[in-house]
Image (cartoon, rainbow, N blue to C red; front, side, top):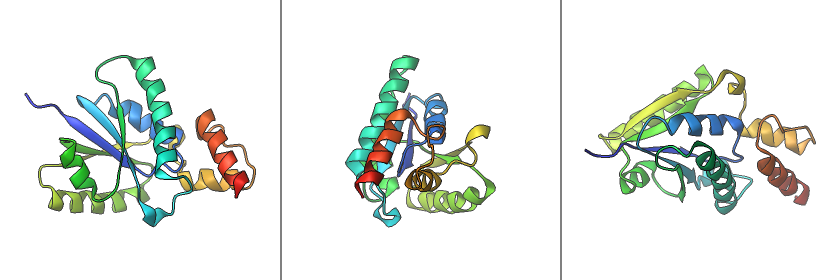
Length: 169
């Protein structure tokens, strides 16, 4: 019997509680969840891929320690096509989170393109938890830029890293 490996890709710039919700729930859907931190220079991320990967890994390590059930969630970075990365990992599915109806159109297009590129790869969607529907990384960065309190949107280590990064610039 083959393992059901799921890849949850994203830029995670920064990682939010919405992302963490999808990670925790997604880990229950297959035999292995890989959180794939994308280079994605098109989005002009604030954090480097190394910084984003480290921040995600810190939270995933906490999740793995707390749940201690089944295989641990893995964190890997990648560049290039998601379908190529997913194939290299032996993935059967891509996991995407949806916050609002507006997300669906873009995600539907991406799922269709990924299906054309790799016909065996399925895309699964999870709706964001109700309290996270409105949270987007770009809003968190803007709130932090203007000195607002971001503690309800991101874990403490992410808030600290974001505030340090903004105060450097």
